[in-house]
Image (cartoon, rainbow, N blue to C red; front, side, top):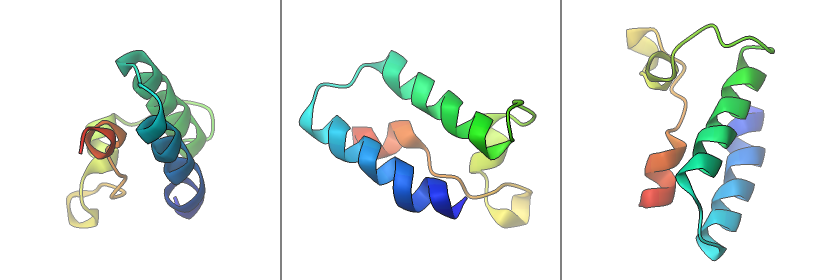
Length: 69
């Protein structure tokens, strides 16, 4: 999770802030992050991973929300 939050997401957000970003690109990057997180197989839904620790989630950031803001 630390690798995703500290290395990959900031690079994508930086590029997305400079160039127009399509929703398909954001969906594909999210899919890649979740595949990396689950070691190849999508086992959990994105909403369950985004939830807080107390609710059984991993407190993953929502990339679409970050880029929109």
